[in-house]
Length: 110
Image (cartoon, rainbow, N blue to C red; front, side, top):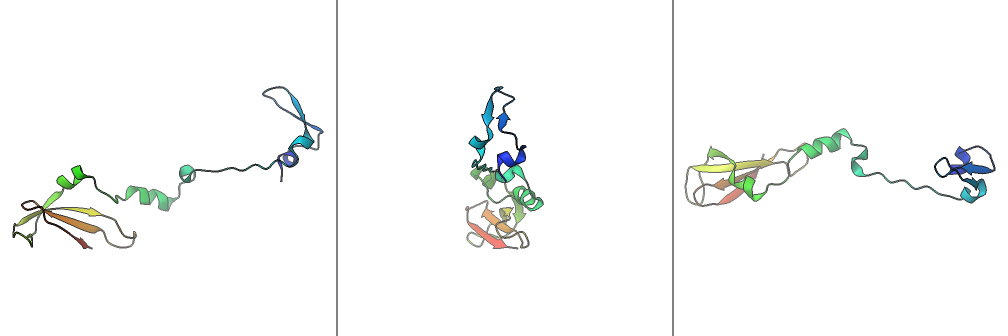
């Protein structure tokens, strides 16, 4: 379907903005291509994905929750931890631990 098909079989197209008339034949082979951005039609899955946090900045690394967990490197009894969803949504989160004493880091997958 072309632009002309959507109008009538009139010999001219009248522009309401510039008040000019154009011959219909001028638009006979006109192709219209439209593009939409990804967020133009948000799906429920995409909206859920945007809520899940998948990265941490340096400030957030310093502000983790504290837990009683023994550091395997220095033996300190306290560590900070953060959780991130790095794998698919149907799998558990990845937990990142940082020793508050020596800075040793490791991670586990829940």
